[in-house]
Amino acid sequence: MAHQIAHLAAAEANVLNALHDPQAFEGELKRADADGPAHADLVADEGAALPRSELLHRWRTGRTELAAALGEIPLTHEFPWYGSQLTPQLMIPLRLMETWAHGQDIYDTLGATHAPTSRLRHVAALGVAGVPLSFYAAQLPTPPTPFRVELIAPTGDTWTWGPEDAEQRVHGTALDFCLRVTHRRPLSPTNLTAVGPYAQRWLEIARVFL
Image 1: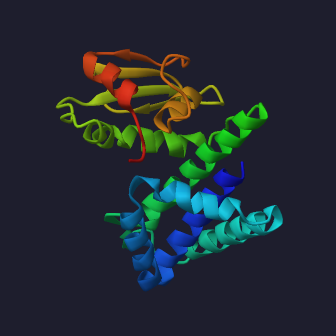
Image 2: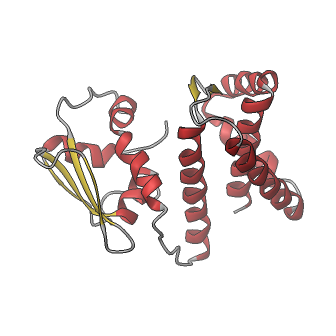
């Protein structure tokens, strides 16, 4: 569990640096490049080695500072990120998504129930927008046809994306969809169903991050 909190604390600090101290963030980019795929785990290991009270304080303070910082700048303001430029308009749901996903890891470790809420819509929207990313990461061409996604929200409402007459369709609960696109669950235990070969392949490779 400490590794999950440490990962989140490091991410909040990185966003703050990217917003307010690009030179410090440039150092983080260089280290990430040098570490390669192991970078996130190495950083989490360092944070997890801290006393638990210090780690929790670092995370709670960081997320409060970041929420304030993101609220003080225009939603379309660009700032540097890993391999790209981002805006608060995208970073805000990304932070919500990552916090929820790592929170799910902690719930799973404890064997506790993580009750879904309507805020999952932000995570689901990122998942729907992640179709090109999913196929890119799998080294596959992006499907030429649109997708229709229909998800049952925790409130019982239906959330929809895409044209109603799309041939490629995905159905299921918002919770299962979010668990799938954040790689917290494999496809088989979920209630997600697909119509069309592209939709089926997407569910198999779906992701919201590289």
